[in-house]
Image (cartoon, rainbow, N blue to C red):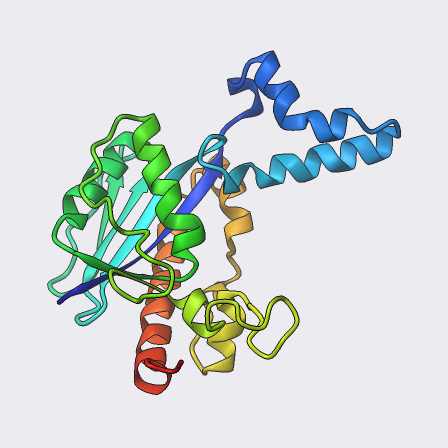
Length: 239
């Protein structure tokens, strides 16, 4: 059965998009601090976290690859929807006019896959696309992707597998690392080796560097595919 490997990039929605009551709720921890410097510091921290929450951020890119063939597609939001045709066998880049179109095209492709591979997808990517799709009323074609945590079907989340479902907690032998660290440990080129990280996406969106975001997201997925193959060959079945 073909497996879909995917990753998303998100960008924070403007604070001004939320009404006064919402802003007070989001920034309450900062507003309650008496010290002005501490208040500003905490406010900035909260705003940086906006990217992590589907009610304060949007999906701006989804990269997808078939785990077996490494062929796939990258959907990304861009003002210019013109993209040159992909070369035969190459990954296709497709610009979308907005997030709704991006999610609709994603779910149209996703319906052909019953199983997925992610890196932290159970904790982030899957619930994020589910909730953003619900907010925008985009039909979801695969509603079982969260799966049961202690199984690899239909969802193999590599962060769960490489930590053996969190067996060591935060400080033990199987503690959790980020994708960059795992890639370097296993001899895979890190997706961050080109100088871009997820922390740059907000600025890159403002600078209209849409294609660069898409290329970075694809590198994340390509690294995840290689990490999945290493896990499958060397660690799958370990209990």
